[in-house]
Image 1 (cartoon, rainbow, N blue to C red):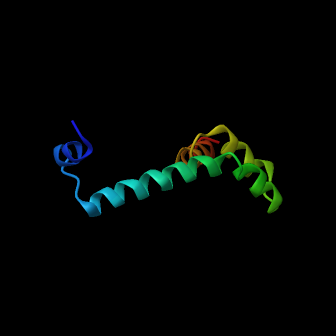
Image 2 (cartoon, rainbow, N blue to C red; image 1 turned 90 degrees about the horizontal axis):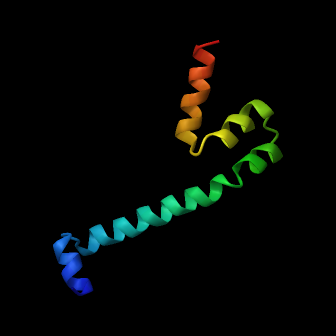
Length: 74
């Protein structure tokens, strides 16, 4: 099965193919940035209360959920 056949099978048109590539690149960029985020926040003057949960959680959404859960159950 060639590339054109795969694209036809997945119903990918030109616009949806470009959207797929853009989303994959954006997701990859976010993952790469997360490794540098704690040092960046420290450079900006962030405290350990901000950096700690960010280092612990694998993504910002999960970090926000953990912090709000911790604050709610204090």
